[in-house]
Amino acid sequence: MFEVNEKMLDYSNAKKFWDELVSEAQGMRVEELIPNLANFSALVFSNLPDVNWVGFYLFDGKKLVLGPFQGKPACIYIPLDRGVCGLAARELKSVIVDDVSQFSDHIACDSETKSELVVPFKDSVGNLLGVFDLDSPKPGRFTEFDQVGAQKIADLISKAAI
Ligand code: SME
Image (cartoon, rainbow, N blue to C red; front, side, top):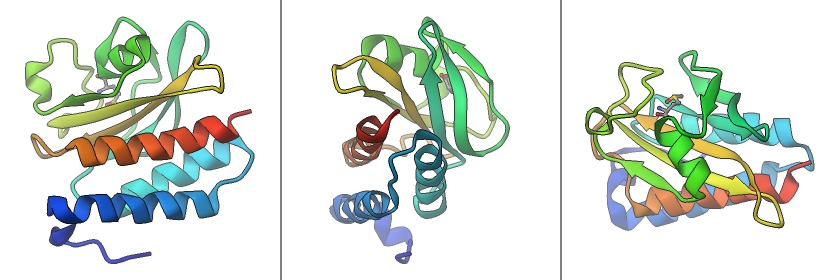
């Protein structure tokens, strides 16, 4: 594991930080869905500064269902018309919320959460498989560097999804 420190929050380092994290995820990836979800959650949660929840929700054809994660217990089901996760899932686009108190439909699984990044991931023909959800106790925590990096990790799931 590489050293995580305040410098990681220096944007000039953020891309290098995520490149290393993605490379580490690639190294541990297997052709099995659940182990990848579990290990990628643990990898990002244990290395990314200022996050309080990192994990996956899987799409069951109708709603998002809680998958492997790190952090406090979370809501199990999220309909596609609810929350930051539902928005990312139904529109198949990444969502960064700098201040969750300003996002009227935010689902607060952890009262410590102040900002959130959610990226969707798809199968080989572009169908929704689920979302990768990162929460932070700091407002405005996530930048486009985090969005691109988290998407690269989520895309590793898509490649291995069974
Ligand atoms: N905050 C998310 C719900 C998932 S918990 O953060 C783990 C949302 O609004 O969709």
